[in-house]
Length: 419
Image (cartoon, rainbow, N blue to C red):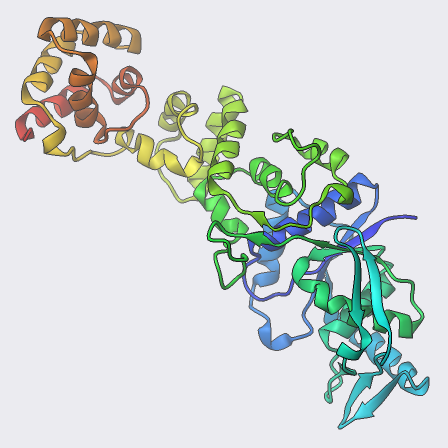
C-alpha cells in the first residue's frame, strides 16, 4: 500500500506550534514510508478565513523544512463532488432533506469503533450520535462531511491529527461507510500542553512558527524539538538530523499522554545546534538572521563578533543584548563602577601593543597584581564600563573588538560617573 497523508489546517490566522507538531508527524511518517504528503486548506467555514493566512502557513512549513506533494488544495474546491455524493446518499436513503439542509442518518444502536494507531481501540455508542447535517441549506458542505469526502477522493491512507479530533472521527467514519469508501487508518497524536498544564491553542499560549524564527531559533533545532513532543525513538536519543528523524519515526513510538512544551529544553537544543555550526556557517547564519530582523549593523563587524558569542548564546535573538555594545554607545550603571579600578585600567591599557585579547589578558592580570585585588573585583567594573552589562562575551575579546580608542574612552567615562 502506498502511504498518503494530508495536512489540513484551517485558514484562521497564524499556524500555531501545536498544529505544526502534528504536521511534522504526518510528514515524517509519509517520507519515512516513501509516501506522499498533501497540503489541504480546510476552508469550509469561509467566515473564519483570514487574509494572507494561507501564504503564512506555506511559508512557515517551508522554513521549517516541511514540504508537500503537488499544489495546495482547498476543501471548498471539492464542494461540487460533496453535493453530488450527498444527492446519491439521499437517493439511497442514507441521508434526507431537513429544512433545506441534508442530514446523514447515523446508526441508532451498537457502537462506531476503530483501532487507533496511537490510542488503541476507541468505541463511541451510536446512541450518542445525532443525525448530522452534511450540506447546509445554501449547499455548502460542513467540515465533518467535506473532510472525509476529500480523504476518500484523495486516496488518504492515514489520518494523523491531534487528539481533539477524536470526537469527529465516528461521524467521519459513518460518512465514509455510507459512501462505500475504505476507511483510512486513524492516529490521534497527544495534545501539547504549555508549562502551565493547559492545552496550547491559538487562544492560549501557542505562538506561530514566525515568532520562533524572529526569536532566533533555527529551523533544524525547532524541527528536532517538535518531533520529540509526544514521540521518542528509544527514550534516550535527543539530537537528530532531519534524515535521522525521517528514518526513525514510527507511529508505534508516539505516546498517548500529553506532551509539555519546555522552552528551557528548546533553548538548550537550539544552542547545541548553533554551537555545532562551523565558524563561517555560524557567522553567515547570524548575519542573515540580523538582516531579516531589519538590522543595519555592519556585516563585517557581526562576523568578527560571531566567534565570541557562539558558545554563549542559545538563540540568535540574544545577540543584540549580548553584543550590542560593539555597535552602539552604552550607559553603565554607576553603582557597579569603581573609579580607581577604571582609572588604573585605562592607564594599564593605554600603551598595550599589540591590541589583542592575549596581550590585554596579560595586562589586566598585571593590573590585579598591582592593585593587590582579586580578578572578580577588578573585572566587574571594567566589564560594565566597556560593555554596559554584567554579562557579556569574554572580557579580553570584548575589549579587543571594541577597539583601543572606544575602550579607553569608556573606561574613563566610567571612572567619571562611578557611584
